[in-house]
Length: 344
Ligand code: A2P
Image 1 (cartoon, helix red, strand yellow):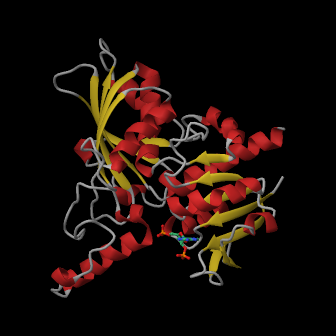
Image 2: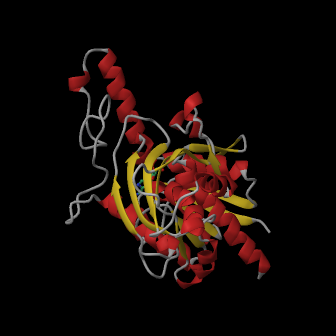
């Protein structure tokens, strides 16, 4: 069966990638409706070498177009206001924003990790796509938790500017151009709290009361929800001047008494769906953003045992967060959802 599909935020960084991923996976589409604000209604997007006109997002557009699957990537406030109209029109909403993620009625899904939660979609009509940093982290945590049982996670991220959408990428590029013109001090600082060119910023999203940022709290709460487990987690989220693909330095503490066998760790990671180990430090081989970009794989490397604690490992985790962390995860959710629908 083929589906009528809408993409809200069709002109954004994730929206544009969604069209590429839908084409790559040959998603069963009957009708494809790109939606954005009135600013870009009438412009064109490309899908399978054809141009499709962008329509304005309205309260009635889902019903008028018989939409069955609606991908939302236009920011939390747009999802807050418009997701209900898609649900009322009978569509499943696959939401990329943080708006519904912690709602107990809304399943939060990474298909490789907790596919069983997709079937809970009927309660709200919505399936939430986790935060990009969370998705690539749980991809490696799941097989490790199955192997030894995870007690605690400590993670620091190195997040690309595309996490802040197209404006984030443009800001880095413009600041670099200004730098080469000896005018960096005059360049605009708007998408991030400080200049991002030639800098790193240890703040993503706003502050919360406990000293962690909202992005860090998302990684903590979302990981616990997806893994169905209240493990201890501390996160430090950092923006770096990389255009695309997030990196994460992760320390995992397993249950007391575990004596880690690194070969087993590498084995379970390599055998997990859509995870690949690149781990040969002597030959300078490890995951990096330039390797992960434009792929659907979460790369893991620099895997090593702690020097002091036998139940602790450290590793580096990299994925294209626009694909693995957003568009590809959303499409993989939709494919599994469609399988369920086809079975009924
Ligand atoms: P538009 O091009 O009309 O502004 P990014 O994450 O790369 O910044 O992209 C955000 C996406 O969300 C764009 O497609 C943008 O469309 C869309 N968008 C932002 N605000 C709205 C809104 N109020 N209604 C519909 N679409 C919106």
